[in-house]
Image (cartoon, rainbow, N blue to C red; front, side, top):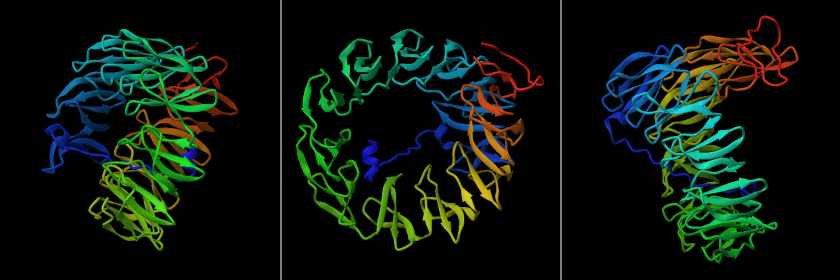
Amino acid sequence: MNQLKKYGILSLSLLAATIATNAQEITPFSEGGIFGYKDSKANAVKVAPKYDMAYDFREGFAKVTKDGKAGFIDSTGTEIIPLTFHYVSSFSDGLARFENENGKWGFIDKKGKVVIAASYDMATPFSEGMALVEKAGRKGFIDKKGINVIPLINDEITFFSEGMAAVRRGNKWGYLNKNGTVAIQFNYEEATPFTEGSALVKKSAHWERIDKKGMKMYGLYYDEVLSFSEGFALALQDGMFGYINKEGEQVIPFQYESASPFAEGIAQVKKDGKYLMIDTLGKVVTELPYEEVSAFSENLAKARRGTKWGFINKSGKTIIPLVYDEVSHFSDGIAIVTQNGKKGCINKQGQMVISMVYDHIYPFNNGLAIVRKNNKAGFIDIQNHEIIPIKYDDAYDFAEDVATIKIGSKYGFVDIKGKLVVPVEFDSVQPYQDGLSKVERNGKTFYINKSGKCLVFKDCKCDGVEDILVSQK
């Protein structure tokens, strides 16, 4: 895959957003840094602002946080699950992950009842009735009763795809089915997930394609091959891209400087410096009169003519005029655009939703974006409200409901309301993970929790007697 990126592969990402239920029509909004919910269609307030952070509804519930604790509300604003959790994820497959004060992970149901005790070092959301978990560096899968359906004996394991998971034990890869039975023996140096009935594996330094019985379908004589999409795989040979079928046969010649996988019967390619859209027969559907075209994102692609950028649809029609000096991909219906050195944001209709007054805007993450103005950094929401004052020398994305900020050469952390929760006194910090941040001060490295209290791990000792030792392992 890295080889393909090196040669300029274009990945076609068509993201569909469907609003189908009342819960999905209710979206978070902020007022003075306090969050509530409104009906996005009627633009009417449904839940008055009172939370430090509010998240999208999933499976009928929305995660909210206040005073450092998290819980859930329903679409009427009723707190169904009290705000008592140190950390909890949104619901997936009817269960939500939670982390306790000791950094262990478990699961609750929609009544807030703990159904799987917090005993894991890592856990992913449930999907198709199973969750990937880890203990002491070993990985496996559990079901919704907490039963180990795939024992925690694996060094690496991928999510299931087409009923199979690629698994590494020691230095060899194989495949398991959902019963935990070895479906394909551990004979490979590398392995990829199954797509459209086959997978790529590496054996004795050679790649081959296998079926679900582990039978070799054919060897690969190309420099690189992508997973199949709509019956075709994008392949690279001697620096040029083309397409092969499931028998490994060339069906569209290796003649493109860059190309994307097929999506809805169309692929985007570049030939002789020109961008084209082709069908599955290799026939040119549309010639794109642009000097540069990006991959599609949310059904729109960036396009450049001369020095100006805009957006086109899959028919090659200009949807947003090419008038900007720079543009980003669309994400959640918003794109960052630049004119005359200043940045703002537009929606998919080309309307300006955040004025061009910023020196820099970073992509939105959980409804907030880092912005820079007059050499200072802070956070805004999608309504352009200044959630965290633009007064810091630098700022970094939120992780586990706190963000890193920098003043001079020192680092600290603020919460979603902009309150300083960890003093700006560290020489370096890492984003919080599982409730801990690895920090450095006065040449010493140690770990702190979200209150800034020091924890000792192995040879990492606290810096100074003012630190409070809360745990030792």
